[in-house]
Image (cartoon, rainbow, N blue to C red; front, side, top):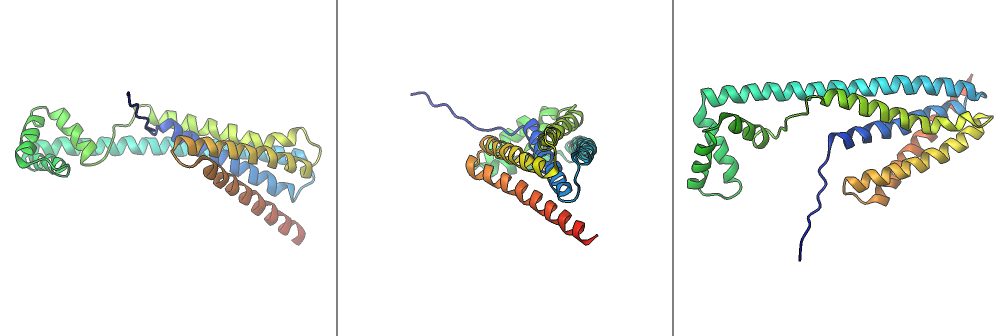
Length: 231
């Protein structure tokens, strides 16, 4: 009987989408909910919401870009150090290779054989050390740019969902009602699939994501109502 193994290999793309969509759904929703408790015009909420989505997508995208650049720079810095170390202290680096295989229970003779063979190819040697000593994978050369685009676009898509309700309703209260329905439903679906691809319990994950969005909106609405009553 054939046995097919199924494992999730987390991708940078999935990570970016999760970051962008989760914030995109939650932050504009909380902003719109807060404004709904303080103003009586959908136009104001739409204008503020669009401004927030534009600013938020740029900020989130820039954050993704800088994180990607930092990851690339860190990898390159460590790569240069490893090349310098295999040149300057090869025996110490060989011992580090042996230490890795010692953790898997290989005997001294096998460890030495592997380390000596690996040392014959400097590039593969360094690549091994990067992965198994430092735990670093070479980032995609376009990682920073792709991350910025993925996060920024996901934020825009997520943000337009709660805001869209105010386009076809006449009052903030009515808009908030439809916005809450749309957003909480979207958060539940998003949380379900996010949990599914990350190997967590889908329903539990969906409820957790939905609850966070709900609490954020209630808090924003309550704060807006409080300050509106004060002035």
